[in-house]
Image (cartoon, rainbow, N blue to C red):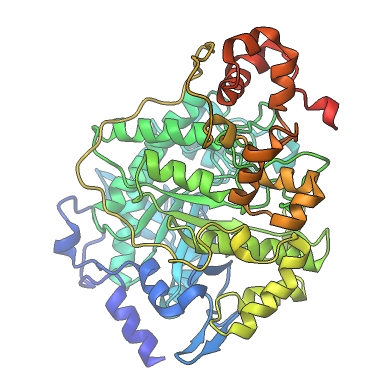
Amino acid sequence: MKLKNLLKKVLCFGVAATLSLGFVPSITASAAGYPTVDMFEHVKALNGNGYLKGVQGALDSNQYSYTDSTGTHGLSHSFWNAYLNDMIFLSPVDGAEEFTFEGRTYYINFAPIEAFIQICNSQAMTCNIQFMLKWDGSPEKAWLVDPQARVVNPNPVVANLQMYAMDVAGEGRQAYRAFWRALMQWCARNEYHIDELILGNEVNAPNTWNYFGTLDTNTCTEKYAISFLDMYQAVREYTNVSRCSICLDHSWTFDDMGNAIPTKTFLDNFHAKVTALNGGAPVDWCLSMHLWPARVDWAPMWTPWNGMRLATNSANTYFIDGTNLHIMTDYIKNNFGAQHRIMMTEQGFVQNQGEQIQAASLAYSYYACLYNDMVDNFIIFDANGDNQMAALLPLAQEVFQKIGSPDPADQQRIADICLPVIGVKSWSQIIPNFGGSTGSAPVAPTTPTAPTTPTTPTTPTTPSNPAVVTGGGKLKEIFDEHYYADLYPDLKAAFGYDREALWAHYINSGLQENRVMNNRLDVVKYRNTYADLNAAFGDNWDAYVEHYLTCGEKEGRDSGITANR
């Protein structure tokens, strides 16, 4: 315990207990003596390949622990939901602290988060808190809600949850700006640290988890960017270490039948808007991601659901899950930069298809994150709730306990449980970079970059006729190795789900054999069906794909897939 207390003293916020509760706009990170240690990197150094492991609401770091020659290693991360409506008041409340900001006095109650912070800090786990606004329609807290959303959310799915967008123009916004500064000063006085502050829950789902009163992309992303920047700027007045995250779900290009904003679209628009609001200076936002299987009630994500593969290796995949995580992480790294770290703060694996499949789905997703240099934690939803039976059964518990262990016997046990049901012989067939380096330190932004333009629909145009595909451009983007292997047992027996091996087979043999490699477009039939395209593109397979994705699908042209089912 003494070692843990010493660690807490070294890593926690460290300023004098006499710090005034009043707003001190001149405080800087260095002047206040805030820490320079990144707890995400610290737990990585402590816990080897188990450093990503976390459980929502976990209060014991030894949960799911393993022991090696250097000691016992348990959980590195924990997560907590906090509701701003239970913490911000305009009049005195028992236990609340008085805080004056820009001439207005508020009463802030930190009791809902204090015990959780204390436990995380004392056990050397990262402290990840998601701040949300809950509203039951009562007039006394309506001022915290964005005016456009001040009606009870009619969605019956969330009748008991009722999470709302925050006010960005009136008294509510001022209260939030006061709250973030009060929070940081309270942490400083008590030597607490919050390692990740997450604003809202799956904010790209405004009809479900963050009610805006509208589905308009521009409105939702603009208002969220204002709320986020208010939090971010307040936190950065005190520390450059704590991460500030946007929370999005795994619907990469899927809009939930018009009920949500695709994650990619929301992220593009948010990044442009928050950068512009910050005067063009970079904002090192991070992402709190929920990496459930593409269909949350279908744990065997490596096999199609009802004949459909929802997560593919296409840049335009509907969903992101453990099978195609690199699509999203590469996009963020290449378009925004590696400083935008990704925390997987909620993923669950249902019991519906049995405990072996649950265990395999968990391990598949964990390894995908472990060997991805953009991901810094993996916190599971180990419970039955939110209409999902996701509490870990014994095999999944065993896998999660052993997954970070360096003992070859433990790793072999995980392989014996998981690989047979996935249908491969080794993890390297399905996990990019398996066995390689396990992530890298966050990269600090250097010079400010100009804000990017938000994603907007473009007018479809007929593609030009580029060189004939040999190594794969658009054709390879839509190549789905899981679909290809599952459709042809001879290939699955020979290659498992090894993407490069299956792609080599397709481009060298499968294309000529008229084999089908995804559930969206049979490129050979598409060519043979339309003489105008064959005349224009010849053997340029990339051009057929480009045409279908930009023009053909909208024109109602036959993809050729129906005939193959």
